[in-house]
Length: 92
Image (tube, rainbow, N blue to C red; front, side):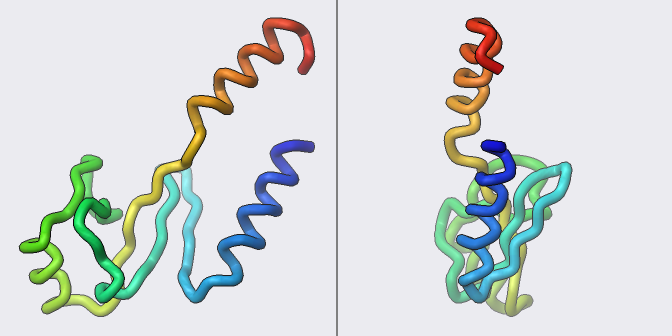
């Protein structure tokens, strides 16, 4: 039940914005305008979680109008810990 409520909450939260989101097995991605790029964001095409620099942003603005960036899932470690505790005390 918690997972269903959480997915419903995420879908309502992100459907209100004029931004496209994509959930895949490889991660969570967001498509944004290049005007909204900031230092430290991670491009979806990047193999590593290294953020982009101002120099990279200038090059991207010349070539593209929209880009996909990687999004991390906040509180993922705390979800794992709480699930482990639930299993430990037979609450699941």
